[in-house]
Image (cartoon, rainbow, N blue to C red):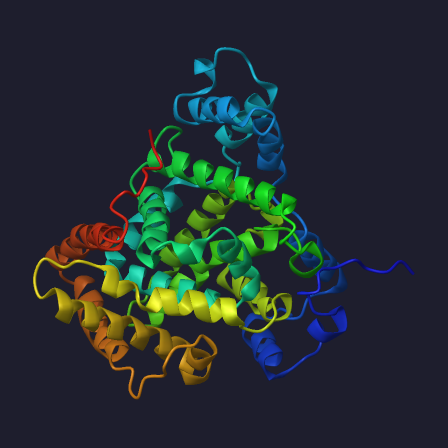
Length: 402
């Protein structure tokens, strides 16, 4: 029997196949197995060792003449293939592929998802920052590319601003039209991921035997799920309950976003239960939290002190610092706070306030049209204001667009 070659970060199939109370409960509520089949395990193993084949082909071409070819790529991205001086097969193949939307794409669901996201206001940014991002630092496989590309030398606010700017871009009306910001930002981020993968694969410091491929298929898929299933779970926990139509729309929106980002369709899910199954595998696809987890978590926790508020700056910085940590502890508990190097809270009160406020507001909005309109309009403004706060630490944040 041929020996299976796998990265050391991945547990054995025998370990992942064990049943426990969590897997039994998952089966009871979803009627599907939490543990992977052997074929699923093999697929997971391949995903950990696979990058983005389509964009990596483009990157191989770019690197034959980096300065010139990157400009040509950006011309094709922002202006179109017809603006190139000559046909370039690598760019033609790639852009023809991403410009042809998959047959399953439903524009109505995309629109529903964007409207729902706007209505969340700062609740959405809280969940993505304090739950999805902060708890993601528990998994060192995610952290390695960040550490090795100097993320700790950037202000946390600048890192947040870059991600938040992209999130705002994709969550605007008609965001995925060919030359709109949602489309171009996503392809640009995909390009940067491939560039980082190219650089790390050449670096003597990157250990493929431990980590697999940098920014690999599985890790990208789990990041994508953080924006969908984790967001949905998070907002429910703080008093906002999406309808079935809205939750399905969010899953569909991020399925397409993931497709555009270069995630293979086998890792793009339609249902929340499928997402939680894949997320659960992370416990066996990453080692336990390490020093990289603590370094990134502590850096993020202190980000509010990089902000600049127009009034009561010091007071609001301290308040934001406490509020964000309260939310994180509410979701992960005191033990995991310690694992991230964060001081546990005696009482995480702020989420309780959010639950009370959101329950009142969002339930009332179902019966009061003006309140519903206010949440829709004001929510997007709150999310844009969050970008201003994150950008304070990095005033020179480069635009993703020309």
